[in-house]
Length: 86
Image (cartoon, rainbow, N blue to C red):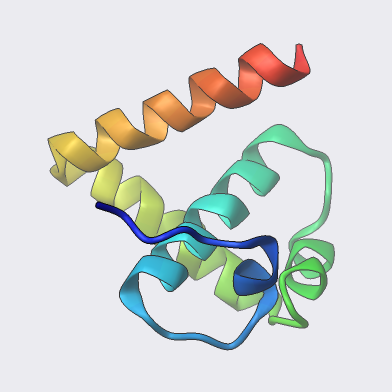
């Protein structure tokens, strides 16, 4: 059973794996689905640097390419986002 992740967790300082992975995925989708700058995405996610956003997106891309379950989970999240926004 997965532990819930709350919006405040995404902007917080926690380095717990489940929280940091969720934060990285959120940054990935924010970059992919908006026109926000890397700097503004970083600021939105708790005042992080633009390089943290770049690292998060690269990490998610790498995991999508190498981990089938992770790729499936990200695809499911993307479907849910698109159903609710388009």
